[in-house]
Image 1 (tube, rainbow, N blue to C red):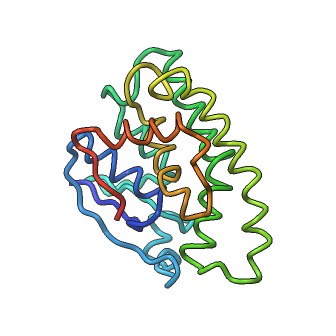
Image 2 (tube, rainbow, N blue to C red):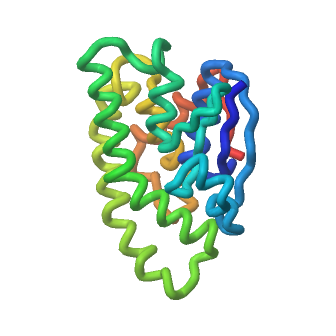
Amino acid sequence: MYRVYGDSQSGNCYKIKLLMAHLDIAHEWVEMDILQGETQTASFLAKNPNGKIPILELPSGQCLSESNAILNYLADGTDHLPQDRWLRANVLKWQFFEQYSHEPYIAVARFIAKYLGLPEDRRQEFEHKKTGGYKALRVMESVLEKQAFLVGAAITIADISLYAYTHVAHEGDFDLTNYPAIQAWLERVSQHPRHVVMG
């Protein structure tokens, strides 16, 4: 059986939980507390020298880190990762966008507010995250105004990658009122018959 090391409130970890639910993949979930240093122990660093979650541990004992790499591994051969070369490249495009243009703003703002309690010495950084976060949301809105999902006509791991932090963007003080296409997309993703909520 697969074992996943993660934090149930982390979007990067929730991606894995959500895809495994969609694909009905049996697994053991090992809850980790990053604020207590649980990802910096010798035993954890032996699994991922980068000291970050999530980690997917295979029955063989091999460990895979980086959330989007894990999604690609698990989705291979399923409808969540198209076989068509162009569509697959577009899935990767959105996953790179998520890690470079979306997560560093929306997820970090949420971390400062939700995990750290918005300390005064991080408030300026928190406010500066708004510009990049709203830019990423505008990009998503412009695409989702024209199509139901980010790639092709059905849900893929591109949607799962971006749903994870977008659906809790309000916890980083992002207002989605002016993004009706994103709101409709969030609802579509949440209507998947095997959807599970964060937590």
